[in-house]
Image (cartoon, rainbow, N blue to C red; front, side, top):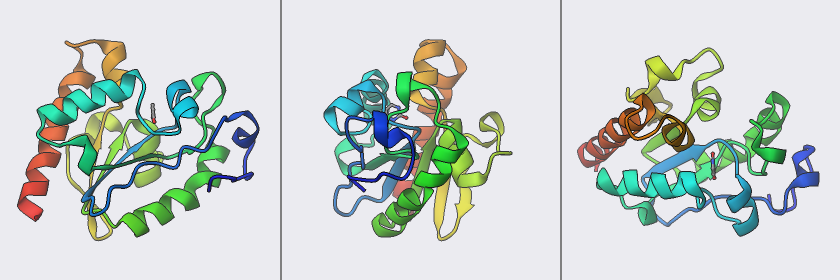
Length: 177
Ligand code: URA
């Protein structure tokens, strides 16, 4: 994956951000695409969104160090624009393969791009978030992207939903283990 030339993002990226996959992880978090901090550092969710994610995960009792984390698209889109459909489509085999290899019990999608990867483009975050969905032999829990929580602020709906939905993930995990 590190040298993937398959789409135009390969021309503008600094590096491919493959993800973080601790041995034995039972949860896989899937974001949208690397931002500037991730493109520079090579790790997912290390910028402002990542810092908020860490805080919310800890509040839910989910230690980030034990979770697998990656993105739908592995290379930073220029100026942090959303990834284009063709980029998502081209990158899809990498993510599908990662899910098979990591074999998590629970997949958590963060935001609309990751929800569309999991459930198709007609799925709506406002309806789907926080509800456990069948996802092959896994459980899928869609939630909001931490960038939306930052945008709408501490009293906004995305922050409240993220907190509650990550709590649901923690409960599911304790039931399944
Ligand atoms: N936003 C994402 O979707 N993924 C990252 O890794 C960082 C920010």
